[in-house]
Structures are given as C-alpha cells and as structure tokens.
Length: 78
Figure 1 (tube, rainbow, N blue to C red):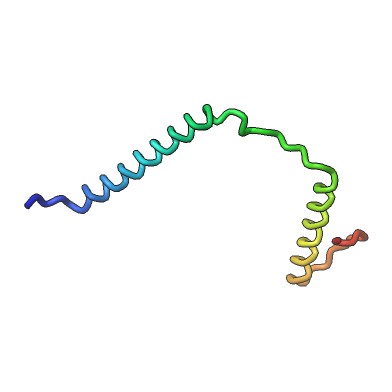
Figure 2: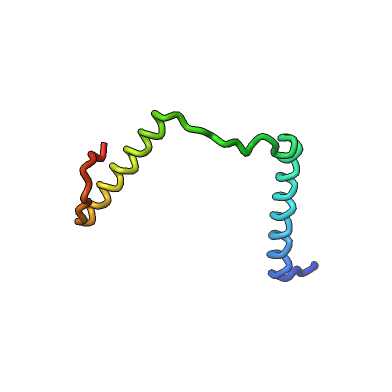
C-alpha cells in the first residue's frame, strides 16, 4: 500500500480548493459577460437619506447613553 504524507494531503486539498475557486470564478465571469454593469452609482432618494441620518443619530445617542456620555446636541435623535 502506498503511503502519502500528511503534508501532501494538505497540499492537494488546498490545491483542490484553489482549482474549484478559479473554476467557479470563470463560470461566473462567463455567465455575467465579464462582470459588466455591476458597478453602478446608486443615488439614494432624499427620504432614504433622511431616514438613514436619523437612524445613525439614534444609534449614536444610544451608544452615548450606554457609555454615560452626554452629547451636546439640540437635534432630536429621531
């Protein structure tokens, strides 16, 4: 019976993972026509910008409250 060292088995497993990853990448590249059209500049609507700003301020106030820090701000977090 042929004995294969543990190092060789680890090497072949890593090599197999690399080969499968490259194979998957190539299939995805061919299926999506070279990744064209995925880099889009998304311009969010003003309502979403306002909502996200309110959410960030609310979270900031919650974190400050949990750590005993007072934020000098006249704006409401929500």
